[in-house]
Image 1 (cartoon, rainbow, N blue to C red):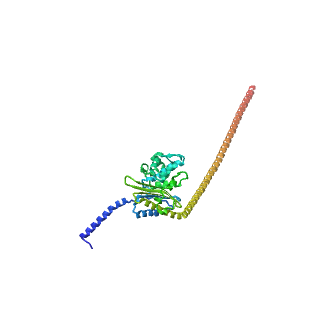
Image 2: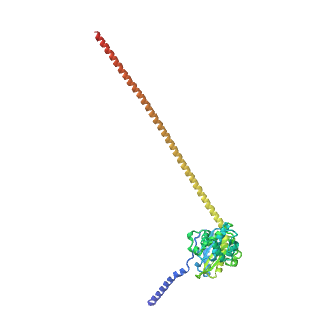
Image 3: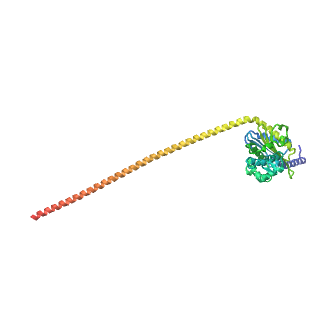
Length: 397
């Protein structure tokens, strides 16, 4: 057993090493922060499986988690999944997708003529130059034609359907995109009624036939409408992205955005292949999932209908109760009205009777007084006659 000075030296050394290790942990955590995750809802997508799929790939290729943002949508069910969804990336040429959607929608709505010339080129050629060949000069012409960056970027917000307070100031100032934003823009493009965005998907289907999402051999059997973006800025940051629609049996929407990732085209292509494989597993689950969802919806509908029926029955019972209360009130009122009428008639009869008795009394009293007066007159007259008779007798004597 170690004791004395050697033991104290060893203990001090261990304490110093522990302190150094503790001090180094925050720096490591800052270097590779936990990725943002979008809130998930119950659906066909397996959030944990997708997270593992992405993070295993990033780990295998020594890519920091905070340098990649992904948006994935399975439109047949509407389910979405995001990785670092609200990190803002400089989009490079990816911005040309919503830019040309704004122009295309104006064409589809008749606000811009099909014969319009932009930068000396006809509209079909402008769409091809920008969406197939990613021409920057004509993209600048379109931006001016639409009224400037502030106008078209504000108009493009409608395609994502996000609240105004969602947007980073860099969206308007420098055209930064997040995976959530561009994925939702693509969802709008995919689900649009025919004629709303003419030429956009047609051109994207012809872009980069052997690159980005199309790079892996296993992606060649599928049609892919895609747009890449690549830019090395004056801050020595290398931005590289690809967004698009992969037409598997049930098409998927995918956006892969990267910052300072080496061999970026291979990375983007490999991630597209892995999401394609995952989508094919979803296709296998789709029928039972849809059946289960339809059964749940039917059960919910039955529950809603039962609740509505119960509420309707309760309403009918309440109406019947109120009607009964109303009828009782009317009956009571009628009964009271009859009693009031009876009392009124009784009072009238009583008053009439009293008046009649009063009149009779008056008549009787008047007649009685008249008789008394007559009797008085008669007695006085008889007395006067008797006095006269007596005076005559006494006079003869």
